[in-house]
Image (cartoon, rainbow, N blue to C red):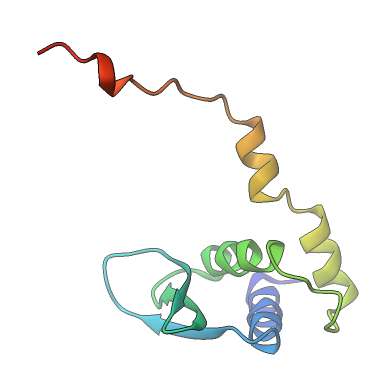
Length: 104
């Protein structure tokens, strides 16, 4: 499936799950948030289809998608994609400096 079609299918899925999407210009990438009680995805309108796919995929990874119809190719894409939790678990943890023992 081409990136543009996959992006469109993922966008449709997040909308069916009740998310609102705003595409804006600016110096930011994008992501999801809760704004005045509404689940919102803010996306830089200049992002490529691949970058938008990443944002929509992250939102869908944290959502229950069994209640909506997804094309088999789209569901397979989401199931094969590593979740953010798995990605964080695979990253080495960096030791944070102990602020209580700073030199004066």
